[in-house]
Length: 253
Image 1 (cartoon, rainbow, N blue to C red):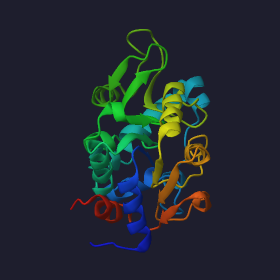
Image 2 (image 1 turned 135 degrees about the vertical axis):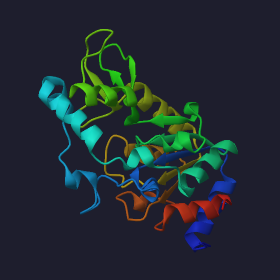
Image 3 (image 1 turned 30 degrees about the vertical axis):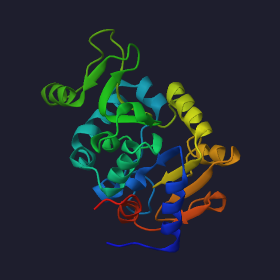
Image 4 (image 1 turned 90 degrees about the horizontal axis):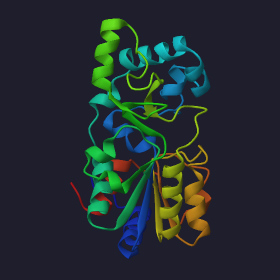
């Protein structure tokens, strides 16, 4: 698919001219991989099931077991998903040395699967591909936990410290990861082009990073199928399908 709108050509020129790009991704980049986003009317995950608040998860074993039941019996699209051309385009920019960091709100691991190294990825909302003890941070693989759940009908406390085991994602009401936020702010402060891809830019504090980049003089590009509240700040906005648009911009098939 050849996509050559004026906005896409402008984005291509901005990328060519940039020396240090930071990329910020949201759920929209992964919908082309078959993963539903969270807020789209009628199809978003939070329209189908009420999310469990962090404080409720911590306070109640019954709530924790319900959370694990959902995890192992619900939608498995994230587990089966593979990177699409949007992810591959981002990976190409990182490999070429144009992009120094990928700040992501996503928990699907698809940036890693597309070839971006962990050191270049900043996960603001964690990662759904494994779990951790909230106390000692021992890592647990989900396959092992699912086996335990199938055998026992529950997930037991941490074998190291008896703490609470939780998916390594940031839940509603849970504090944002300090280290990731600090890294994201530092990377944002040094870029000359900040590219938003597939984010509605309504979730703060994460959505504050493009504003911060713009305040410090960086150019801002927003690539998202729908309009965002920060479109007025952008030097260019591309409201097209993400995969075809970005694959054209970076020159991949």
